[in-house]
Amino acid sequence: MRLRSFFFSSIFSLSRSHSPSPSLPSSRLSSSLSAAMSPAPEKSRQGNGECNNDLKSKVTVVGSGNWGSVAAKLIASNALKLSSFHDEVRMWVFEELLPNGEKLTDVINKTNENVKYLPGIKLGKNVVADPDLENAVKEANMLVFVTPHQFMDGICKKLDGKITGDVEAISLVKGMEVKKEGPCMISSLISKQLGINCCVLMGANIANEIAVEKFSEATVGYRESREIADTWVQLFSTPYFMVTPVHDVEGVELCGTLKNVVAIAAGFVDGLEMGNNTKAAIMRIGLREMKALSKLLFPSVKDSTFFESCGVADVITTCLGGRNRRVAEAFAKSGGKRSFDELEAEMLQGQKLQGVSTAREVYEVLNHCGWVEMFPLFSTVHQICTGRLQPEAIVHYRDHKA
Ligand SMILES: NC(=O)c1ccc[n+]([C@@H]2O[C@H](COP(=O)([O-])OP(=O)(O)OC[C@H]3O[C@@H](n4cnc5c(N)ncnc54)[C@H](O)[C@@H]3O)[C@@H](O)[C@H]2O)c1
Image 1 (cartoon, protein in one colour):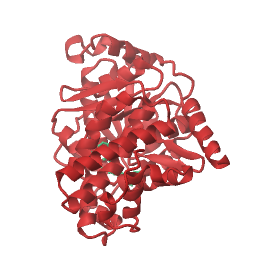
Image 2 (cartoon, protein in one colour; image 1 turned 180 degrees about the horizontal axis):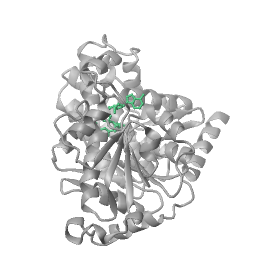
Image 3 (cartoon, protein in one colour; image 1 turned 90 degrees about the horizontal axis):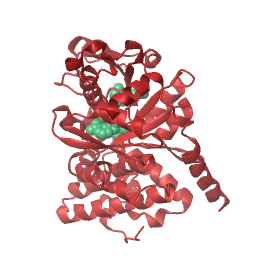
Image 4 (cartoon, protein in one colour; image 1 turned 90 degrees about the vertical axis):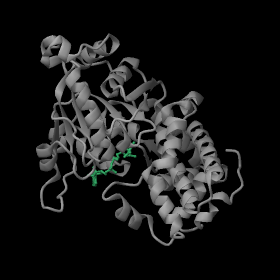
């Protein structure tokens, strides 16, 4: 009981305190903001001299996987068009050697393509790959974090003390950290560790589809400043990528995080060939558990957030087509005999699964709070992933109406 109240007070103090002083936009950012609030001057029409170079915002994308590369492509196309942004977009690359011995960064800069994580798609000539994290962020005042969540703690530690001036961040990372004092959303981790405000962008966004410019939507969650949210919306929006701001960071981020657990459940259903009705039931129960847990952790979370792209739409797309679903399907087909690690390495070629680790992290929170019984789908997914239950158990539980 004492543990639980300590846990709650930690969560709530986190949610109140993690965002640094309501960020007053820097001069560079306020120039972007005014551009966001008024019809955006386009470089091609207005000329590059429209906005003083020193006042232009500079963007760095921290991460270069499948979604990271697509995010860089979206941003790069807008940075070229909008006079309030520098043309160049830096992209930090976790350096890897390709099978031919070349460095991934060199190949991206030579071919303008991330041949490992997004082959066949040009990123834009203004994307510059940089393997040095500190160097990549040093001139930026807008940071876009987009790596698998398990690497974010290490990245923030490396950047600790290195971010100075008025810098804004946005996290596209779906996942959370569980610390001894409770769950810590990635946007909170960034804000606390780096002392900067952090919005989030989540949604029904399978990266490969956006890479080929198929229409989709996304949600930007913001905490204090609608103006900053509008700047992010402007930076990401294209005719095929429609972004909506929502005043609910935790709701948006928890949707993006928890839906990966529902995707694993949907994969089990597919692997066992249980059919569409069962899958729809799993999606419904999953969505309800997402909402219930989000509201228990953060009472400020809004019901309406679950009807945005980050909510119901992401649950649908991820249960139909995402990588978590695909690997969980293979796991169920093997009768739980092949491990997720083995399947991830074989099926994803370096891309990372998020659902299995998120299921473990969610289970730790549920267990810690005495909520396991209230969340049968989340708990069952974790127990199947760890081999304590068979994949068939995904439909063998009583629905406790979380
Ligand atoms: N891919 C999608 O369709 C998609 C869509 C929406 C959101 N997301 C989210 O975006 C985030 C990033 O996913 P992604 O698809 O860009 O990545 P990915 O899974 O495609 O690639 C893995 C990335 O991790 C990097 N990496 C490997 N080891 C590392 C280390 N030790 N430290 C730091 N980086 C390391 C790799 O170089 C690579 O860039 C995740 O939170 C994911 O849930 C992905």
